[in-house]
Image (cartoon, rainbow, N blue to C red; front, side):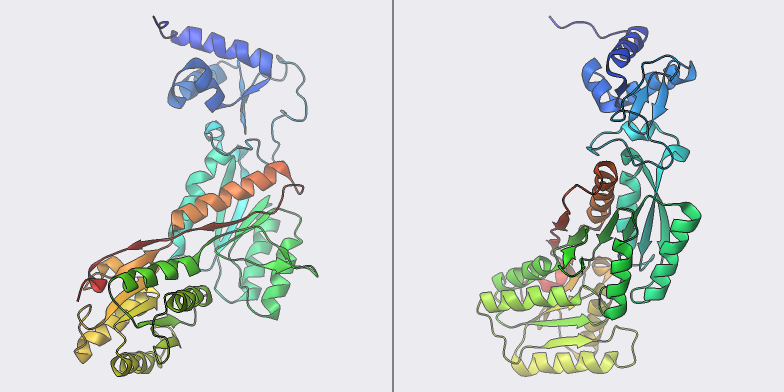
Length: 385
């Protein structure tokens, strides 16, 4: 016969007894020990803290300094200038901390209105439980000076203890920027970017989507639908275009699909004056070569291309199947566009977890490079002809 649950007063007394033995406790440890939910534990902690019986720290709780034994450095609470205290990142101990107790982490992203909001949200949602708070700054995709300016402001005005950033990565100025970031003396994690530094090309810690795999997913799906010529059309302004194109080309070759003459177009984005001419050039090539499917990066370019197909009497998907890449607004098109969807929320969440672990363990931790797989969402634009 199982024992009856502890009364609230008994729970709190048991919590205090464990705390006297162990020095510090995390919410997840307490919940497991007492067989209750984290919500119940937080309620008990709030009452005990209000009575002055315990103190809250980044990693959980401890006895008040005057009441408890001296703590070793391994379990001492984090100060405003120290890293977080929850190494695993899988519990909710830090959520009991006040905002003022959280370590400040900068986040610099190149856009606040397309692709990146979900990544920012993922990082922000995960941050409190890891003992950090996100301070967000917007920059641009290719303005190295602006990126450096935003980071400098975060360092000097906020005193950030870690940095999540998506910097430019192409060109000499970008290489100098990344070397500067790597030498800041605080943990840095690249988000949706990869880079190396130094004479031995050492990797910078990073979390990114496996864009080549995403393109491969699209090609394999279209091939399974019977398409033997699958073209590629992408915006030159996206830093992801080279990897998406690589995945497309490698998979077309691997599957022995027709490649010679198949459209392979890198175009200015949909706002550029040359855009319409590039779309017509690609569609002319589709008609001339019998290309029956296109992978288009990104959504906005795909939607604009499908609109041009309608104007020219090219039926989608009847004459030309289209798969977009990004899945930000692809589902809103007419017809709704099949799309490769990067796990943007997970990218942000994983990036802040990686940064928190680096802040906790220090420079001896091996450099991690995490690649997250996207998935394919099938809609009307690529159905059976």
